[in-house]
Image 1 (tube, rainbow, N blue to C red):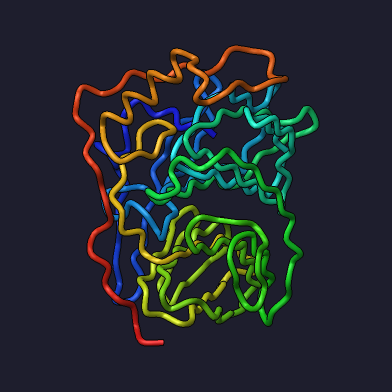
Image 2: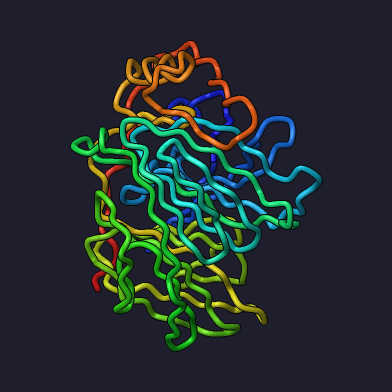
Length: 328
């Protein structure tokens, strides 16, 4: 999806964070996406308290929302310096990009698109979709790979049962399950559904920091309540994560992880770069239809225009110093 905010995340973030000894809870803020028929999303990263979790630099959670006539219609828009990760709980979205890909985003199936130096894509909900519900995630590319070639990968992970939960590992490895999808830094991405009144202990990489985004359920992460649409963060140094669902219905969560991303980044609109000058150049290239981002075939409509750049110099941001978690 496109980030429709007119003001860059690099210069304004509005969410809160609450901490316990083990878990930092990141509150979401409401952001409208999509112009006149805006889809309201709940954004937990980036924000002042935390810019990234590993290389994960953007996490939007949306729905469930009833789709009105016309549905979701996101015209072709650009990306650079990142990978987009689309994951749905309900609904179907048609994806087209300037690599020539024509694919569908369906519940429980991963679409991962690599922007590299530049790609464009459109996203349109299908005519039979009456409800949309899911997450849109971005991954910052390391400096050495920021100009990587455009790429698209699709993967439908098999659900795996463990005691008290069901896992769908769409990136990285968890409990012996490994996704075949390629990334440029080590990452973990998985849907973790916890049974009613169940506790599950997940074995994780102690070199990773982790974030648990809650979609539904009365969830505790390491004993700390994480409300729906919020995200619980745990620093590196932890070999297990304990998730408890106190609700009478299943809990649905998204677990993200990766080693701390040490590079500073600038995020504006749909671009992840390293300085203000690169923002200006990327915007100019998109508005001029220079060929850097390519064209999307099969979408009947005009590309999305870039918003104006704020009258401030956007400076790089990185996470606060990492504190280690409890011993594993």
